[in-house]
Image (tube, rainbow, N blue to C red; front, side):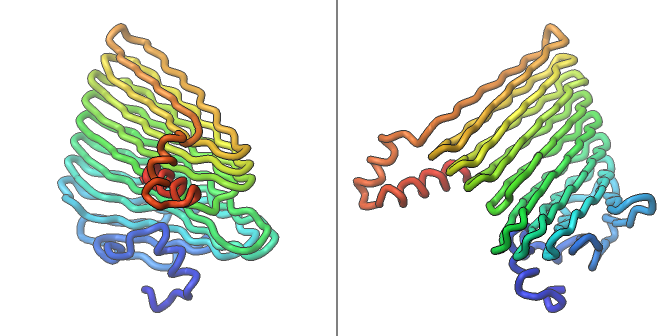
Length: 309
């Protein structure tokens, strides 16, 4: 597959997907609005949708520890790509899904990718979902990414989502929704860095409908220059359940970060917690590293990298 790609394609794919594991298991590669290569396995089938752009991914029950890669790369300036991907995970399956989008834009028109992903997990199924977003290019055209993730968990299932915006994304609205039945667990870890005049908005909307359903949402972000970030978290406890939502942000220069928590308990045994902390890098942290011989800039970079790790 790599032989069919030019250097820009390979670099984008390297940033958003684990190339070491790419050929292990099933994959579907999308470039500039079209699927260009696909591999299925005995346990994972990928089918092109007939009514709209996108694919259906079917994982057989009891499938264990298979990789599924569905990266998107965009190198065409002015393209607005929308894709709908649905994942149907069979009973007691346990898989790793790697998604994400890389945009290269060297021209003046905006390039945009909107990926709508829905996950339907049967009883006892487990998914680790890794999603990375990356932008590059010398053009003035914006690199825009608007991912939507919907998660529907049946009894005893769980999904762990790791989402990161690496760099180079001018504008993003990231929506994550979840509906959880009994004894389910939904864990979300988000990492975002913005600079220049970039804008990032994150919306979490999770409904804990079943007994002993739980969720843990963590957002870590760094905003520098004149960039702006908005974090909105809505969690509804509709049964005996547990939820913990936290937003931690480092702010520099003239950047702005807003965190808006909303937790609603509709059951007396709902246990819901939200925490938020926004501030600059502590002076004592910088001093400690600078005494080791680092410049102030180097010390800041080390602290930020550690914070987002």
